[in-house]
Image 1: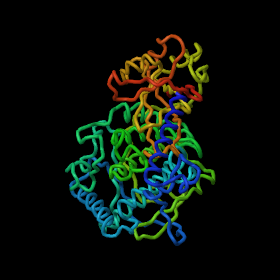
Image 2: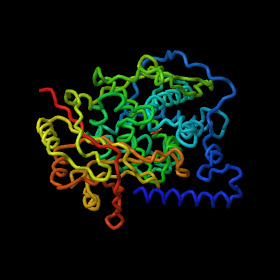
Image 3: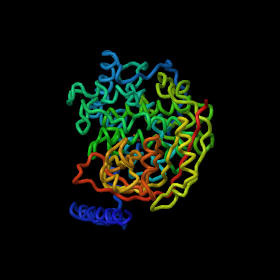
Image 4: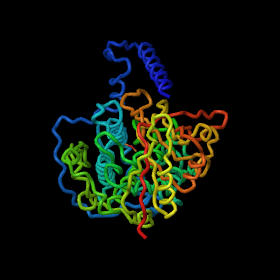
Length: 479
Ligand code: C2O
């Protein structure tokens, strides 16, 4: 795998150099670094800078109101939602300098995800949940202001509910440019459904049962569980390998992005409510993280992570109950099972670990396989399936099939440059009794293998990968 990656990198940078020369930009303009062209990226999504210093965000005195599932909006709520996005899109042409216009709103996301310094990037680390909450908050207030209704709240696309796996109706009906909630680049059609594999129980359990914030929301340098699956999968499913949603630089150009992220935000809220140990970081490094946004009156504001932690009292919106939190069993402490699955090329399960895992599975407890720093292909955004062997990957039987472990979504920051793309991903996979059986049946060491989902058998290319670390955690249930 590392070889293929190097080739990709070299191939890409060569193409890029030729392209730059062809349009009359030598390396002079961009310095000696032929891999990067910040000028080009900035033209597309400039830093949302302001001449004046940002004013600190203060109190919100709106009424505390629920954000509602996008699938169950009334027709008057749908009209409001469409009117609000319509007004936002009108600003794009009537006053392109208005920071509340739809393109300017979408480009905020672009700036925070691409060629900006890696320290700005709001993905792959603990900024993920807090930044997106703050971003959606200002976005929601702007939409409300534009329709003269500060009671307006963003809807959320509750794809975790199995009957709501299609794009919410408002966003696809009509499915053309007369609908301000439509986007022309979606690969997902109005009748397609998100696969259970991406947003179903296995994935939701792993997210909502994350033991602490490090697991759930990550650290300064590592992402938490749900940022990969389900969050990344939904980006890939809506955007395919070329659509806006599939790349962070363009994702927010699709209005469904905000409904998707509202649900991601709800998952954070649900996780917080799930257990007294599900608390947010208290370090000042985290609490003092801050971002600037234009508010609904075009005032440049700064808001900190500390200010978004209590969405109900601080940001004035609530979510309905979580169906998932209600059905989750009461788990006792998570225990790590260190095994000799730590080798980088092949992973072998020790007999003692096998016994403990079988016991926990037998008593309806939870078993998870943690894979850290799995090398992934970087040539496009895609969902990969993880298999325990190249043979199983070649067969690609999917969930329930032989050697199947789960999915690994790869959402790239940008189509153009590999700068600031992280080259590895973490995955935390729920291991059911059936998955474990197929693992146990396979004699010998496991060989972690990815295969891009949705490929015909003749085009399937299993990709052997390495992980920096792998281990199990198990939790018994209270009986
Ligand atoms: Cu900032 Cu779903 O990405």
